[in-house]
Amino acid sequence: TLENFLSQKDTIYNSEVFNELKELYGKEYDDFTTVQKAYLEKNINNFQIITQRVLNRLGYPHEAVRLKITGINIVEFIFHPNGDISDLRIIQSSGYSILDNRTLELIQIAYKEYPKPQTPTLLRFKVFYRLY
Image 1: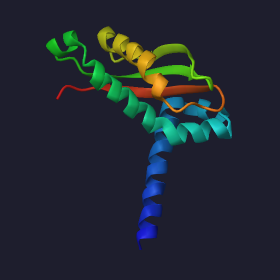
Image 2 (image 1 turned 120 degrees about the horizontal axis):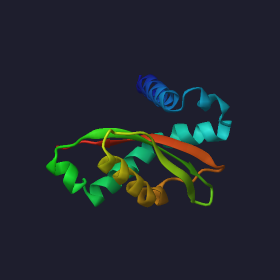
Image 3 (image 1 turned 90 degrees about the vertical axis):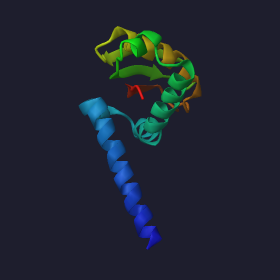
Image 4 (image 1 turned 180 degrees about the horizontal axis):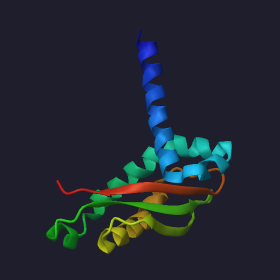
């Protein structure tokens, strides 16, 4: 039935989200509160979508286009209930400072659009740089 299909789809989606969070946070994820885990599980994809949208708006770094540079980095920061962020940093480099620096710029703009947490929460996610 349609209900069974939708339930299976949610289970697959939730396990993919859970696996991504475990990959990003490792054992640290186990120490998060239930509220923090629920917030991350609900929003991890939103952070990436919003960030990519801002990247599309700002544009790919010109020098990276010229050099045909692509990559993925992982950014981390604490997101506070009042909408502020702190401790912004790259925890896994793309291997290119031009992309890592663009990610830090992106987050300074994009975080304003992220759903706010109820408690200070460590956000950690991947930012993808692809040339099409």
